[in-house]
Amino acid sequence: MKVSFHPEAEEEFKAAIEYYEEKGVGLGYDFAIEVYETIKRSTAFPKAWPIIEADIRRSLVRRFPFGVLYSEYHQEIHIVAVMNLHREPDYWKHRTGKDTLPDNADI
Image (cartoon, rainbow, N blue to C red; front, side, top):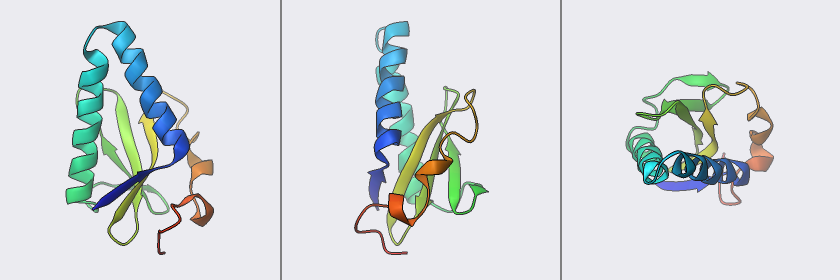
């Protein structure tokens, strides 16, 4: 299954990696691996995680207080947020909607 990131989701993912790497050498790498494992589980079982808003699902990241928020459209996972669960819960909502999907998404 193909995976795409909303540009802001990709930026927050990179920022979180940098943050954890500053906290401890290798911790950023560990965080990235856990997020990728979460994405891998989401692509294998896209409907396994709860819907939190409209068609957006949240899969929790192991070991870190983060969730991967995504929608599924015809064999593609579109990640709208790599969300710190201690942050404002609705900050990502402007990233949803047909105009924020990848060009090849068919809804």
